[in-house]
Length: 151
Image 1 (tube, rainbow, N blue to C red):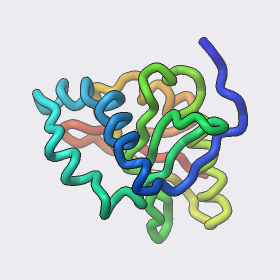
Image 2 (cartoon, helix red, strand yellow):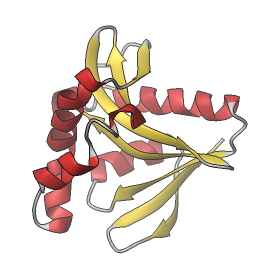
Image 3 (tube, helix red, strand yellow):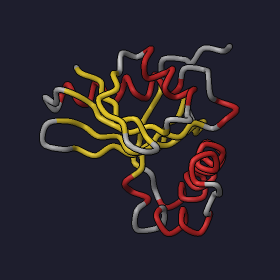
Image 4 (spheres, one colour):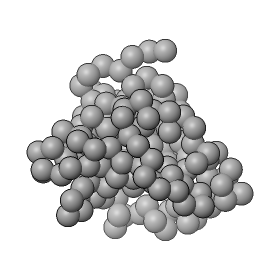
């Protein structure tokens, strides 16, 4: 397994990143989504990720290379990340963990006590990463685990 370099960068997505975000979203999540919902609805994804929502994403990059995308929203007591996608060929290299470390640093600067999120129950690779990073399961829905990382 390759190890990620420590200079992961997060930047607000621009309109020119829309095709990349849609691509990484489909490549990273279609299998898990099909397991849960029975199909991948590309039209629905394009309705939800479009010109008016692209700036809610952040691009995860190492140097000039884009390796993923995520969405983080500031809530009153926490940061909530709703999506994190890493290109399949870049998974298991530490990029997801480094991006989460950046979110942890942001949460601390904003004086937030935790980061909360949901993960598909079938997404074993992500669950393994989150547990390794110290995240705990706080609830269970039909298709997801609710998780948090206390800071």
